Image 1: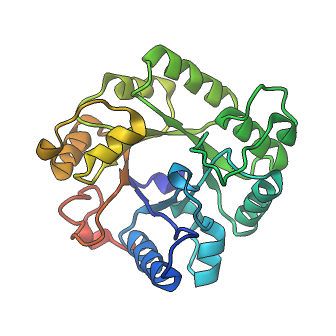
Image 2: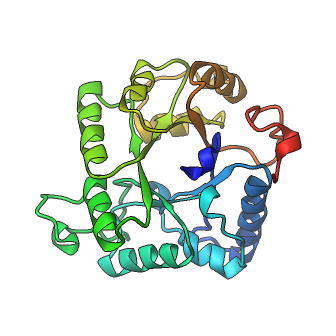
Image 3: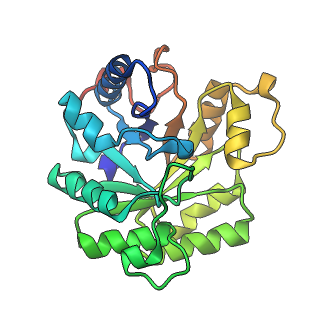
Length: 265
C-alpha cells in the first residue's frame, strides 16, 4: 500500500496556460526527483481547482522521469471525456502504476463532465463511487484506489459517503488538510483502512478556507510547521499528505518520520 510511506507530497503538473512552459517543466522535474530522493511518495492531482493542467502521465513521459509504482499516486476526477479517461487508465497500467486517488473534482467551463451512461452506470451523476466501480470493471485487480474525506462537511453525511466509497472498492483514505485535533478524522481509524492526514504547509490559509469552506481562521497566527508537529503527535498511526509544501526549505526538520540518513533508500 504505497509502500507504507509516511508522507505523500503533492506536486502539480504545469498548467496548459503557462507561458514559459519549458521553465515550468524544469521546475516539475526538479521537484519530482526531490520528492523521490527524500523517500516520500509523489502525489499528482488531476486538473486541481478546475484549472487545465497537463496530465501526470504525459508530463512524466515527456521528461523521461523514473516511475516508482510504490511511490507514485495519481489522482483521477470526474471531469474528463470518456476517451481521455480510458487513455489515462491504460497509460497508467502500461507504466506499471498501481495507486489512484478517485475524487469528484472541481469543474470548470473548459472541462467536460463524465455522464453516467459513459461509464455504464445507472446513477444520476458520476461521483468518485462511479469512478471506483468503472476502474474495477475496466482493469480488474490492477489498481489500488483511495478516496478523499472532507471532515469539514457534516460528519453523518460525509461518513455515509465514505461507506459507499469503501463498498465500491476504496482501500485507503486521504483527508482534507487538518488544523490541530479533529474528532472526525480520528474516527476514520474505525474503518481499518490506511489513512493519510492532510497537512496544509502554506501560511496562505485563505486559500484553504476558500477550498474547503473552513470558515474563519487567523492567517497571521497559523504556523504550518507547528501544525505538522501536532499532526505527527495526534495521528501516530496515519501517514501525512503534504499540500503546498515549500521546495525552498530543508525538509529534514519537518518530515521527521523519514530520517535524512534514510533518504533515497
